[in-house]
Amino acid sequence: MDLHTIGIDLVRQFFIWSGLTCAARSVVRKKFSRTQLLRFVHTYTSDLIGMEACGSAHLSWSRALREQGHEVRLIPAQYMKPT
Image 1 (cartoon, rainbow, N blue to C red):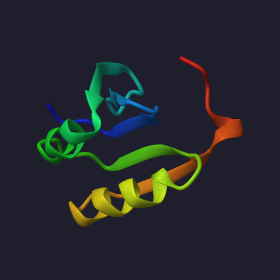
Image 2 (spheres, rainbow, N blue to C red):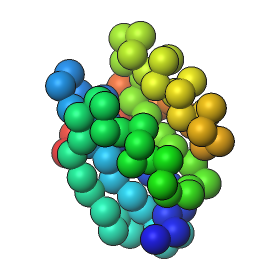
Image 3 (cartoon, one colour):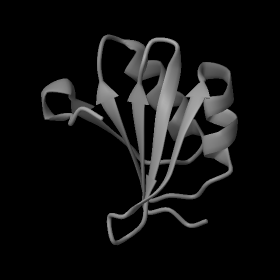
Image 4 (cartoon, rainbow, N blue to C red):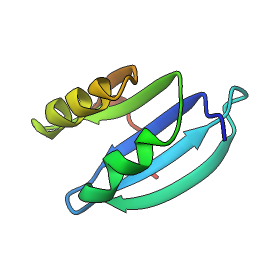
């Protein structure tokens, strides 16, 4: 599946992962533990990964995703929409 954008919500015990097509239609929504996330995201190609910038956890996760070749953009918490 070719996704245009991946959104990752950083929650304490797990991550919520959403995949969007070029038409901004959500096609995938999954819940992962911290250990499963990097393995799963590595299998998908995308143009952009958006993450909520909160605390300091986003820095290590964005660095790990950039090492896999993804473009990561951090979004301030005040611009996030509750799910």
